[in-house]
Length: 387
Ligand code: NZQ
Ligand code: ZN
Image (cartoon, rainbow, N blue to C red; front, side, top):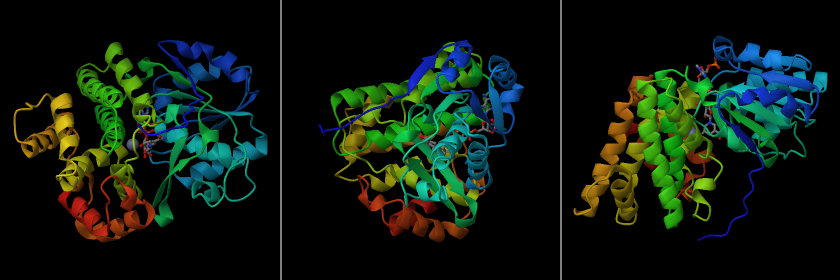
């Protein structure tokens, strides 16, 4: 087991109706609030009105229209401007991972004198940030329990995962009832995203029985609960368990002490959604089985055997490679069965920019350091196999 230095300072408040605590939580941080949200789902589910009612005694400024794959321009830049002009004390992000991610770039950007892109691209480092509180309405990214945000810059086809310990949300409100209205498409994509977060930690050189068990249980839970959520969107128990599996996804808790994996599928997918603005979880579901097949070898096969036997219940009394291939097939079939389009062409991506994307990934994502190193040729192969 490898050493680690782990700290997640986020307070999680979980359960139906927990939003009632919002006024007392927000008051700890100040009176001037930037309320950030997306394209209107929070209005449809009544959460916007509820928040405005609960915070009637606060001074509220708004940033709306934050898009999926949140954009640096205008959303981050507008948010930074509003915070600076109005001396905002605390940001309240209400929505999915895109809204929350955007507020993370705003929180540090608003305390920085230069161009906020300097921070996102690690040309400079933040000394401070505005505190963030969130009400998450979509189970997927785990942004509510990590310090990362993923920001897209359209003109340069960049989609950067930006991490800064200042950006752990101070408090995350998790009420599974707010996820009842998440569409089948986004529910399935959220499941694929969370499953991939776990797989990115599972497929590595050095793990423990403890972590493997934790991750295998979470993968099984996600598959079972997602099916239930798709069958009955208002199933509280299923939505709740799915939400918690997702919340743990990205802050490292699943894999404390493991060797790093390099998160290769995320490195590849970020280029897909930067170039084509596709749904992150769908891009991951498409890439994952092709990446698995590409890296399967004598060196990696035992990991796939463990995954296949423990997660999918594949018989262990077979040739190792047969088990591994069945495990990869089962991964593909699960994503397919929950309605995810499983080829790039199904999400509007053809072969015309594969070389360009492979080059972009090879230059920017550091995947030569991954558990199984990936170079430009490997990336072209994986993307082509995904067509
Ligand atoms: O914009 P609104 O109207 O709110 O609608 C959203 C959006 O259209 C809708 N939605 C959200 N909650 C809803 C709802 N619709 C009905 N009922 C609700 N309760 O869902 C759509 C997608 O929302 P989005 O926030 O984009 O989804 P998600 O939470 O999956 O976030 C995806 C973004 O997170 C990044 C991804 O790259 C992508 O940009 N990631 C962030 C990570 C992190 N911070 O740790 C890790 C992930 O790997 C991921 O990269
Ligand atoms: Zn992800």
